[in-house]
Image (tube, helix red, strand yellow):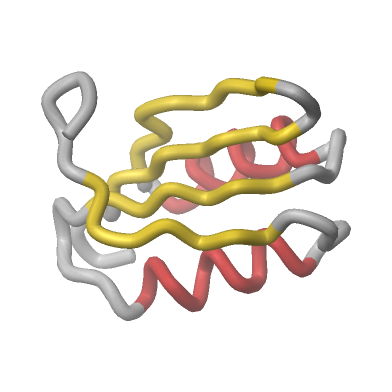
Length: 82
């Protein structure tokens, strides 16, 4: 648990490049219920823009976006109807 949310699943997309992290994240999110939270680990430097844009377009909530030692971590809450 972190910052008031519980991560249901962690998806490791390290070593993958655009568009694969987004494709894998979308598939994982589609299998989740509204309000569930997914953590995604990515090493693609362009992913920050991609994940933020995808969340903005789909209405899913980007709860966290951080980088440590070249690994970007995104925590996404599934919105209803996505």
